[in-house]
Image 1 (cartoon, rainbow, N blue to C red):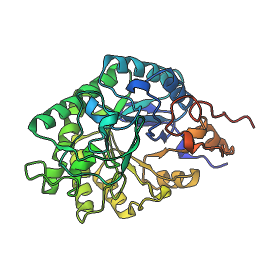
Image 2: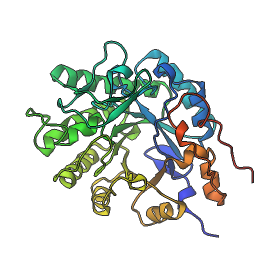
Image 3: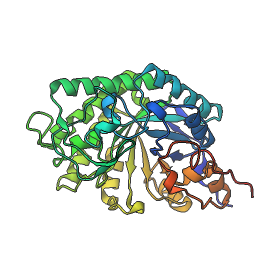
Image 4: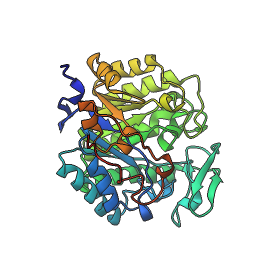
Length: 362
């Protein structure tokens, strides 16, 4: 019988993982009042057979709370809520990183608390709409271009949220630089039309991202700091631009110099987005020397092949974890996967379509 490396223990920096399977970050919108709760602790605890869990996108500040019912990590109440989650995962022998996600221009005032504002590198409106619980779908507004004070405050908020995450018991932090949110908005010359040191050249457009990553790594340790990227991604109105390859090559080189523990590359082509070219994945693999996580439409055999050939060190799976809390065991034992994925309940409050999926019973 074939022995799969996918199911063998490995290390992520100094962190021991029981297998090479990662549960991808997935927004689930169960944080009522933006505070993690017992239901979320149950959900993540059910899935702790993954070698590593990366949480849903979590706002580092009130300004980053773009979506309905997403959690934050900036208040004492939120930190106490996250402690329940990390305890549940650690009780089952799992490891868990929090994903810090500032939504930037992908936001709506109806989803933000009083006093918060929608900020972005430039006052460039995103095409599309945002769900709000009070008035349903609404067009994205024009964001406020971040001034020097906004840049410093946001940088400070990322650092404070990362420190809060470690206080809450997380094993590390993933900074979300993908899917069209704030950090990626700086990377693109379409969403970032600044003329100061944060805009224009590739080096300038990467500057804020690298400043945030540097500060977080210095605060919590580079062995506890990862970054998620989505080159060629089009989520949240991020059109292609000619310098994509050069931008991500430079970024991978600079992140490698910082010594952070991992890069997480996401490819959403399995859900209809453009495929991330193998060439750019290969370039990043050669430029970034630490752990590389690949995600996007994997099955067991392709995951094993990419680990065997060195294309990746860890493989992340997303949706199969939603309706298969015991996904790792099912994959390892070739048990059938649950077919009943309730997509209409992905982002609704409550336990239905969240913690009520069955474990395998033969």
